[in-house]
Image 1 (cartoon, rainbow, N blue to C red):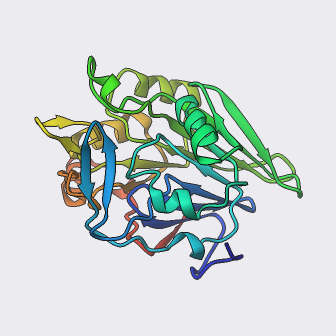
Image 2 (cartoon, rainbow, N blue to C red):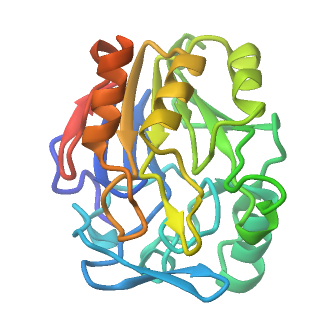
Length: 273
């Protein structure tokens, strides 16, 4: 990986690669989320014999990435951690994820610095200049009960970036592939207001009609519950199993009076955090 990459950068910022894959830059840190680098036409393996074809191109390839301080992985699913990422990512980079995913990454894929966090557990990364990034695992539920066992355990996460003086620069909530459930209000009560919520949408629908990620109305519900200063939707049009378009979410938040807090970022674009 080479320093800087081909994208114009600012700090703090979010660069959207596609699906749930972003580059977050703040307080000198560069963090990759949910690395999905399959090309258009390739298939993501979702487990239990399920596959889905990618409909879009990622904005970057792994060899175009800048140097990374960490990867934050919400769960081990083929559209969040794929074979291209597995081959192309530097195995010395810390991967902060669920306990289940960390065991697989360490034992089967050679990512020895994969770290699993239980819900509400935190881990702090420290840069040589003293800046810190505190990652806290938050509740998430990928499928309605009693079907949760069909899909991998998932976590949301709170990223708290602080400079060398300890001053917090940004607090970012990453939803992960969750549905609205009783854990979402607990997140708001536990962490308070955040600067930005990055919401995984798409209304992912499995055979039989099972919805396992937020559709437009669910996304608006979570937005209202978390009540961030700003929000950015991702994970909405990259695969055929995504059935709820971005336009539906934007219409719904407009109807509810929240549109002025939502910043849309397209693949290959950067927005300020």
